[in-house]
Image 1 (cartoon, rainbow, N blue to C red):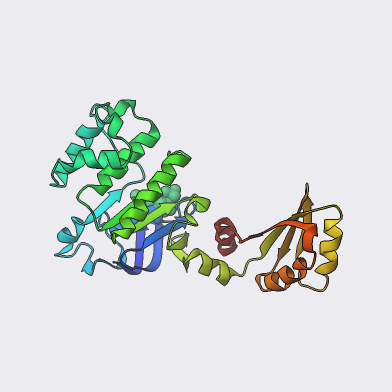
Image 2 (cartoon, rainbow, N blue to C red; image 1 turned 135 degrees about the vertical axis):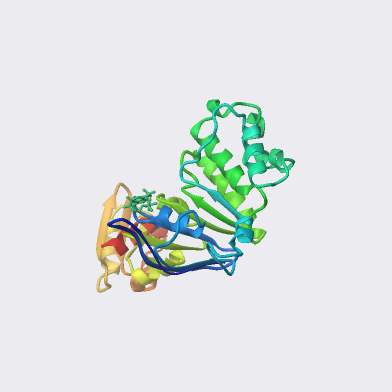
Length: 299
Ligand SMILES: Nc1ncnc2c1ncn2[C@@H]1O[C@H](COP(=O)(O)OP(=O)(O)OP(=O)(O)O)[C@@H](O)[C@H]1O
């Protein structure tokens, strides 16, 4: 659905994107993460044909961006920019009517979309009175006009509270079930790590790593943490049964013991810990977070 080959972008002396190759398959929910200035928004704008690439090629749905048949593809694309520009004097519904007219989409779909993003109750209120999260929802409704098959969402959850973020990802899952392809950017790694199918880590204009969160974790081979709770003297017993295994660290906070160990030592450690029987009250395995993976790739 999205295919970028050797894409670069120069802004004068600044090379914002440095030879990006990226393939996103139909129906995929794809995350693009990276620190400020990594080049995410620039890559998005080139994919949408809003700015030309300095070199390289991008195809969307088989058509070259900026090519003769790109106009048709563009009709099937929805875009939520990082900073949505809205007119304060219009109501939510008037705003959506305005965008529907621009996209030559029937106005009749607007009320349904406002309900979908949780703004039905506020559709006759002026945007001036909207909170940041409400503005973001309105921007999202705008991106969904015309039932796009490909959605680009730049920092879509900025300003949303946790409940709204949950609602937002529920809508994305519904869209994915309908076969819509989505690409979203985020800084909030914890938020997207369990929600996207695959992601790319972008740094300094380059894609440093790309794959499912699990694949990236495994490729990095970062240590895991086992967290266990139990009775008095647990730490000594844990240290005893794990003796000889490759354990990085054993820490204690309150009544919890944290054991940091390489992935390959997980099953042997669990087998040995099981011999402690009822001394163990609880045990959890913590995978490295996306933050750990992200910083692992940066270091
Ligand atoms: N129009 C422009 N003119 C000059 N430099 C630009 C322009 N747009 C972006 N840049 C530069 O290109 C680099 C990448 O910026 P970009 O906005 O793509 O990053 P980003 O990953 O989206 O960052 P953020 O998460 O902060 O939005 C930065 O160094 C930025 O200063």
